[in-house]
Image (tube, rainbow, N blue to C red; front, side, top):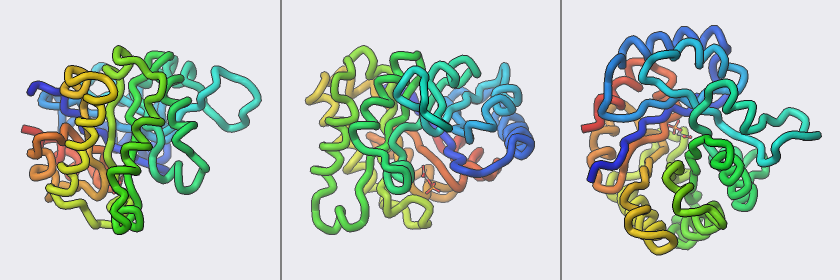
Amino acid sequence: MDRKYIIAGNWKMNKTPAEAKALLEEIVKANAGKTACEIVLCVPAIDIPAAIEATAGTNIKIGAQNVHFKDNGAYTAEISAAMLKECGVEYVIIGHSERRQYFGETDQTVNLRTAQALANGLKAIVCVGETLEERKDGITFDLISIQIKRAFKGISAEDMANVVIAYEPVWAIGTGETATNEQAEEVCCFIRGLIAELYSTDVANAMTIQYGGSMNAKNAAELLAMDNIDGGLIGGASLKAPDFTTIIDSVK
Ligand code: PGA
């Protein structure tokens, strides 16, 4: 299966523009010319111009961490898809669990943001994942199913070519506790099956499905070797150039 592998960093609220420039220069240098996977760094919005400049003409793409679902208007502090696009952003993370947990993101707003990103030519990295309580209650697959069905309501099969799904169990994010390879594979495989049901096996087979949640330089190779894991969404370890580079090199 020649699915595209994508290793994406999520810097969250870290790095000033000057710090972003310095770290990106390190990452660019360490990964020049690599083609085994697409490399994306999703940086804070204020860092985007510096990040675009630092990665111009390289194999590193820049992503944002959120996008508003309206074209423009009275939405103080929000950033539109057109603004991101004009800056040279290619990807945008949508529905990260921290947005859901702290900023009132819902499955419905995830759907609206996804549609808006795709309509404006951005690629959407849509995050889904269960909490520890939901896993213990045995409703992981029900929950993932609801999140996916709602996120992609009204999204065409054609548009799904510009969608990446990131499975991020909430209990594994920033906790140092990674899902086991089997746990991660089981859910990623379930997601692919669900996409096949909702769209087609062609759409499902072409879809890049990432794992995220304490992926690091030590565990990346094993996770990325699983059949249905086609990349990673990496928080903490994407802030260290050597660790992030090791993860990139783990893609076989
Ligand atoms: P982590 O974050 O790698 O620091 O666990 C992953 C994410 O939130 O995308």
